[in-house]
Image 1 (cartoon, one colour):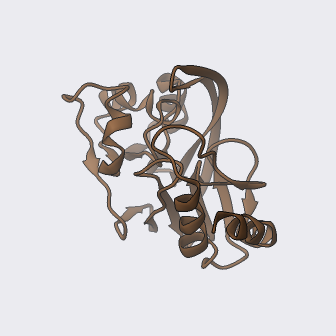
Image 2 (cartoon, helix red, strand yellow):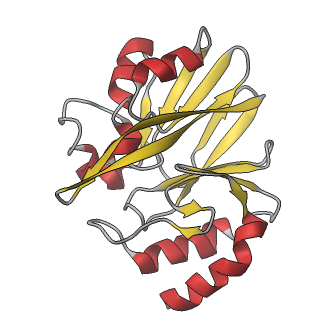
Length: 207
């Protein structure tokens, strides 16, 4: 059972702006099956990283375009389902038309792959349908853009809320074991324990 990562590059667009970004695409599985977390920018590069393994699911931590813009092509190439929290439908439909279906995620769902369980934590704030994926077997949580090395994800654009993301981090992430490794949507990984001291300042600022 391993965690793999590739970094893909492209643009993030929202509210009339466009920014160049590098995205972390995470692959969780073994030699036989794998789950992709956040299919960003380059479906072919992700497909090659999957290789001859069975792709069980393409999981979206949220529906900002830079986290989902390769999901459709990857699903078409592999037959894997796309999983997304439906609270992000408004963002999804900025990228895909209504005919592109996804399977709804909800808080408490469990995605099983290669003997490990990914527990879905609904963590709105950066986006209404943002989720994190916690796997106790690997001592890791995949946070998308909810929590980074250095603090919470951005909340200055449409469909985001600073108070909400602070509540999500306080109630859903800081309750995880401090040694839990945090694998983020962009940039370096960190840990719950490493972020906890500074997060208290963000929590105080949020309320």
